[in-house]
Length: 154
Image 1 (cartoon, rainbow, N blue to C red):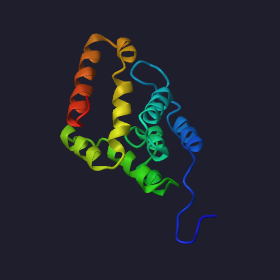
Image 2 (cartoon, helix red, strand yellow; image 1 turned 90 degrees about the vertical axis):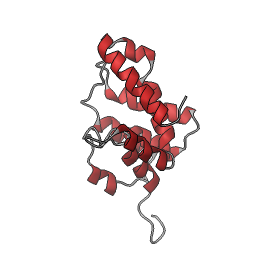
Image 3 (tube, helix red, strand yellow; image 1 turned 120 degrees about the vertical axis):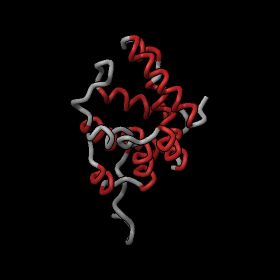
Image 4 (tube, rainbow, N blue to C red; image 1 turned 120 degrees about the horizontal axis):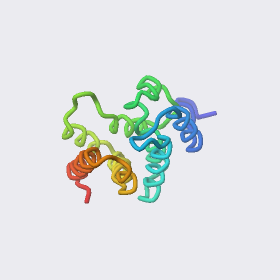
């Protein structure tokens, strides 16, 4: 039970992980690997960078709304902290949104930049990029570098 006036106890990290793995179970990344491997790498990257449990939970869920694995309505109703929900929403790209606006939203949301940093680090991992064709590899490398610059990441 939670104290009167408070919402339900937020999902634990193992519960968030299980939920994210199930939500993305049928998805593969650009290299054909199970998408959950990317989510795990981002969550581990957040942990290594000193992120807290709310950021780690957001890392597991960072692509869930954008990829239609979970709905924005589900996220709004989910037993997660407001901060975790805000980070997930900040990292959810909107159709037709300029990359500058996307970066501004991330920078304006406490905790989101660290999660995006871990996401970009895994996306730009040379081992992941090496299995892609040269055109895709070049396009993604430029895209990730642009976002890192907009977020002030080295």
